[in-house]
Length: 200
Length: 200
Image 1 (cartoon, one colour):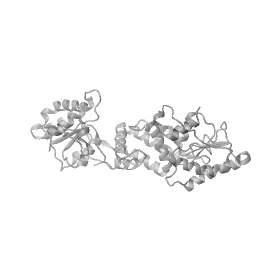
Image 2: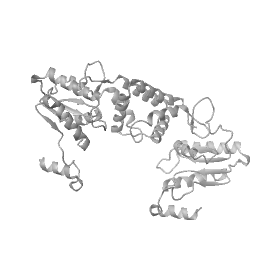
Image 3: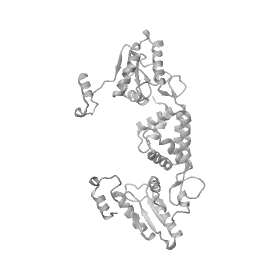
Image 4: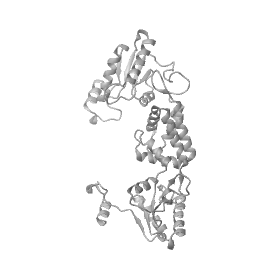
């Protein structure tokens, strides 16, 4: 009953994160209702993503002719501090705070295996090489491991900390505590303990 | 910090139903991670939606050379029963039950104004004309008004029923009751009353 064109659209979109078959179908009808000009604009916007490159230093994304991303190429950023995130969106969240002026490493999403994938080890290797080749004493001033404070993220953070301990004067994690607007009554014991120990 | 190509993508996708700025950004990174071949395939799938046409009889969608959609063109369907829905996705849900073999009218989403828009009145007009010109006695055997059983849907269904009362031998609504898997304890009074009156 559905035209081939809609089936094809649904087939692609239903596999995307947090879009199931129903939402994919709703999106198809939404695009159709927006008309051919908007459909064309959307198709071009998606095709435009082909121009996006991955930075060979921090593995964040960029476009244009440069050999590295905008952050790695920025002369005003601190070159001896690195912050490790899993995902690009986390890097963007941290940039939005405007409280960090160092460099990054995007490690890629950690799998449930509890081990780093070979391509993630390669990314850590790139960071090590940058530190060895570009920094005095072959040590970073600080490496901040910004993984999610879950059992699972902590496990991986410990592994990464061991891997990098000879590459930085200091290795740190993001501070834990009650989030702004959060309620003490509902905070778990560990968060509460952290927020007591790190009281401001 | 974000490349122009990603900003453009987010600008379009964040406005789509149930996709906000965060989800749009996540989708952009998902597409980038899928690689240029998949990006190209997706762009083409979206551009393909330009071929979708709106059926001039029932206002459902179709593609190809025909002058009407697959349902309106199907010789095996009952031509004197019509079912009115708001949305295409509702038509699809009803088709999937395989319990209905008549024709449809897609009315388009009802606005909160409580009145039919002029283009929706025009759609009702098309249905009236089909009934007048193609059916004996200029009456349908049945018109089923399948709007959501909300206060608001009921109001509109009443209005449409008045509009169409001279065009059908019988005008009906979808049956109400406890949904399969639903719990009597949590059913509202009206649903429970309906399910008692219409007990099977």
